[in-house]
Length: 250
Ligand code: IPE
Ligand code: IPE
Ligand code: MG
Image (cartoon, rainbow, N blue to C red):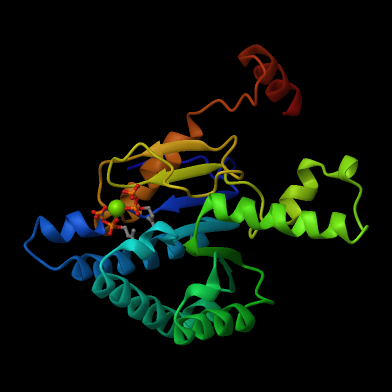
């Protein structure tokens, strides 16, 4: 049993869902089979987050670099994404889940893009929890498109370069309005960010587990949350400062 302090849960959990391919290969199955089982982990983690009252959950589903995989795997993943959206819409509505999508959606096959946009539109007024799907997403690309948009505003004379603050940059990112993640989970043991939320992860606590994504279910999730609760978040200050503030807060 994992003991969680329900008053100190992260507001925003982000997940790099990795290891589907290896999970399948270890069993002599196709990589796509791994992605299909991984979809069940997505459902489990979304539901558990909702139950715990976690306000924001962000899932890295497909990176800009993943377009370089064999076309068959890319096609399979796109079909899976479309089916996932179709099968989950009812559940998202029932659970009050608002879906957001970040990434270069223009690169998606039209049927996938339309399904994504339809789910985002249908769930826009839900207030239970916000799930952000990062698809065709790259952190560098997100920052680059923000720079481009800001440059355009400067060129039009709408914005003085001296007034470009961190808040202005944030406002042009795909994730604007979503607070930075408190906890990043990466499955399958890789100690890297793989071009996920580069800006947004500046002060996020990082949890890496060897568990492969298809095996990452409620128990593993609770372990990650328990790890988070053991961290002292200092944001550059000293441990003594943080401790003093904590005592004053209660
Ligand atoms: C994560 O699993 C899913 C995607 C990147 C789409 P992988 O497909 O990367 O699985 P491994 O890392 O090859 O095991
Ligand atoms: C990161 O996993 C992207 C997603 C989980 C969607 P990858 O499997 O693509 O990462 P690398 O290439 O091993 O770093
Ligand atoms: Mg991988």
